[in-house]
Image (cartoon, rainbow, N blue to C red):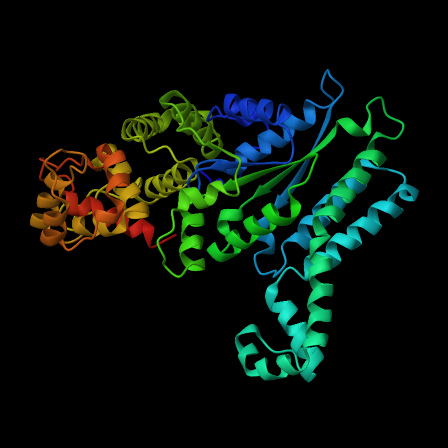
Length: 456
């Protein structure tokens, strides 16, 4: 057995979750979009947004030029790699330049492109208002002050109005040119790309795919969205952003200090249209699990030996609608670790040690999933048999008569904030108590699961 890392899908042949039709829809939409345009691909962490972007990148690359002679150039940018950069436009420009170098072979053609590149880069440095204020205060006092300290210089500013006006006017003029400079940059790229080709520069468009933006700090996400919308939405350019909407809403809350702002309406200011990642079908979840198992347990004889465990694993997740690909990988890894630890343990009733066959697989899958993603609920099953049995009977989150407040009072576990998520996967919590006293009780099952969570 071996563990498989959490890597995205890069090729359609590896698309076990069936994203192909969804990707085809996005690609067709992009090819029929008037620019400038900003698309959002929205979904929770681990649902497959990166895989979708990868597949989309390949799809766009393979479909150009179109029968009409249009060329779509996909450019990949991972925002998370530059999380600590104060100016994310600059590394984005580098991604465009790197793509340009791979497609335009003649270095002599790069002179105009690089000049526009420098113009955009220089203007992007001044996008921070804090930088502009530092420039003004340095001009006045010889010391670059932070924005929060500017009030101390109000009198000096009043006395040097002409100097302040000159500095701010130059800053405003430079920043105001960034959109024009960026448009010129892409126009030059299109002209150089079309030189000597069967297609014309007018039919060249750029699709900039920005991944992992939702892994950045919420305030960084908002800053990037604002810069893109205000400075980089230009003709012949389509942006496709993979986002977790909840992270954007958090950023909005931070930006406005908790003021009541409708996160959806605010996001609509930046995204012209949003695609929501569809929930995988039961058939695709089953196929995905089978594919992961084939990688984790490559030996065919071993697969047959563990076939019942794997069959039940897939069936429970499918029945529970627990379909997040990244989470499935993690749970499967833990199940294999449990098998590795307990398969060879000799049954000893006195010491309450059990071998693998004594543990009911449905409970194992459910408990491992709870330990990984609902740890406060999992704690209810670790030590007290009476509490564990009471909790087992009360985990009916989608029942019409379920009382969340009473549950929180009785067990001391906060669930109200996560109730919609719990209700959506409510069948995941249908644990069964062991009736054979020679086999591990529910508490002992939970403790065995807990023992492997401490190993990883």
